Length: 139
Image 1: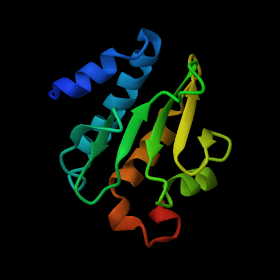
Image 2: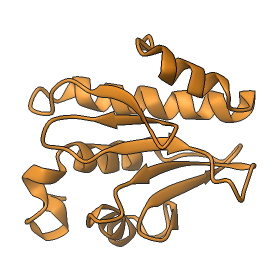
Image 3: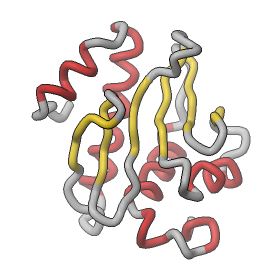
């Protein structure tokens, strides 16, 4: 697992219940792995936004990780609601994920995650400004 360099981000992860933290750290690693596997994406910047671990690359759209306040048995990957990302994910993967409006993919604790599909969603988010004018973001 990639080391968390930013102490504020590490503290944010530490504040989550252990079962949620474990899942969010898996999502974090997936984001880092996607960025590392595509030279054109570049280096991921890890920071806090709205008190939650957030990930951004040049030419991409921010991805945040967190837990919906209304549902402690869930965790989520949040995307900028002013993009076409979640609408596109919903069109490509209608039965694969649970969505929250136009801003998140939400997971139940203990559920199986289709990591191949999620990697694809993360890649589209990290390349968003390069693909936003393409039909289905070039998916």
